[in-house]
Picture 1 (cartoon, rainbow, N blue to C red):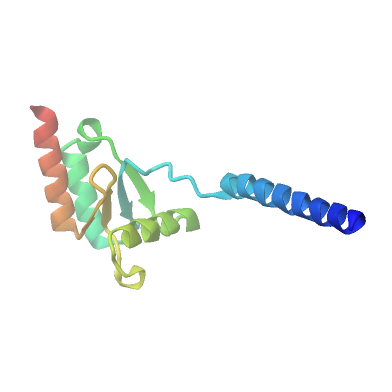
Picture 2: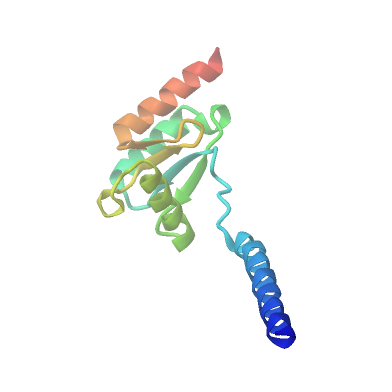
Length: 130
């Protein structure tokens, strides 16, 4: 009885320690969303609708008035993954989304299409000017 109890207790303690350590290690590998509360404009250099958004932003000096991040979805897999994560957060099917695509991190809202994205920035700049 003594040896089997000692073996069982040792196995239990090893498993408990392994599970505790595993929980700490898995937290280390979790994805940290550095853009969680940011405004992100997803685009592609050869996208005509993206060019319309960019023209509006440049002509109205939006980057000086509204803080936002630009991510080119064809520049890196990370940027594409970010786009897909944001689309999923809005309940959108990732295979049916494109660019331009805007993520409003404060409202956790997705905005699709150049007309609505330009309107978003227009409204933001009006609010920032007040």
